[in-house]
Image (cartoon, rainbow, N blue to C red; front, side):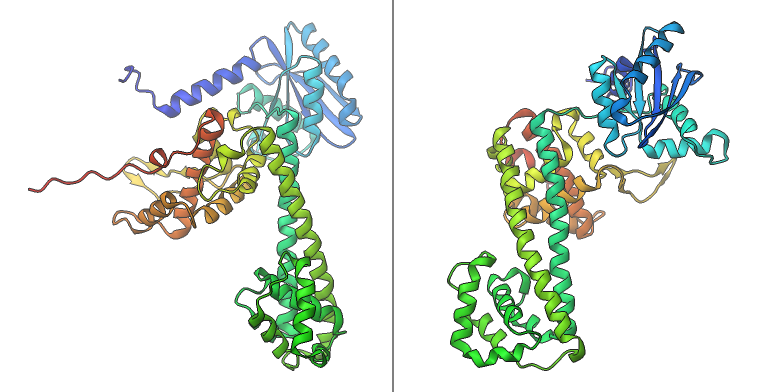
Length: 448
């Protein structure tokens, strides 16, 4: 039932968020705005009208800011304030150092988005001036206006998962480059070998064949013709375990590679150097795959420590590694007070455009954490193969007669749904329920 105030759910959530921020930015606290840098820090002490009470420029590292915080607290007390709240931009790693120093001194800390600081810089006097001293004042002003947020404070387990997730993301990018580069090189100097398998780099047999050729050919694959078909297949079989396969190879692919060893198509002058380079990159790829597997194992160990592995994998199609990659980007989902807040953090929430009788096209906000958006997008692609609820939802979104979505838009909607469901699974410690995850059935029209 309505309480008669007319407040929407968004109004109530916003009011609660502002109340939480006001608790760490009470009126009797001065605000210490700090523009963090490598060796020179700009510090201001301001009241809630952003009037500067004290200012310092200190040549020190982030870990040496403890005495500066104590100086700021003393200035605030001299001005009649009961305490201070520290505000900074969450750029780089230095804000975490400052957070630790603030915790040790019992000072609350809030963060201000750099985007807001940039826009406030322009609106301040329309000159677009940028100095560290001005930015420190702007940070304090935005914090006083509650245009800030409380940063994530994790325990050691969640922090470890975040660092492993960052490593995995880098290795995935490196592995992708190690696939694309040899493919480009081979297309230039020996394109026939790429036709030996439908998806060459996904085939362990093809990768083993290529490794055998590049190790022995010295820039001329035709040299391996003298091995004959049987000896070539035997060499590939011995190489196969290094590429994640067993001793059982897919013989048709090996025979096709053997058949094109003498194929002359390609830029002959670059063949020697390009094949040598492809061999080096292929070895890099094998090493990256090993590091990826080790990182994935470590991430699953963290999920086991959090007792989340069975819960998150109850969602069909979501692997433990895929869930760990998402949780590495979110941190503990409990810090998001609603599932929708997590979706907004990923930039997957719709951005409405409406005024009066005008309604524009709704698009994704695109703000938030790109790494989280990417992890959710990848997880949806994997889940669609085995998750009947997601497949039905995708079909409905793309074929409904009223406002059908494109496949890309529908997958983005599913990524947002996955994040909402994962928030419930982790925070409430419940398994995924297909009956609750499925959209409500459309009402059946009664016959006239």
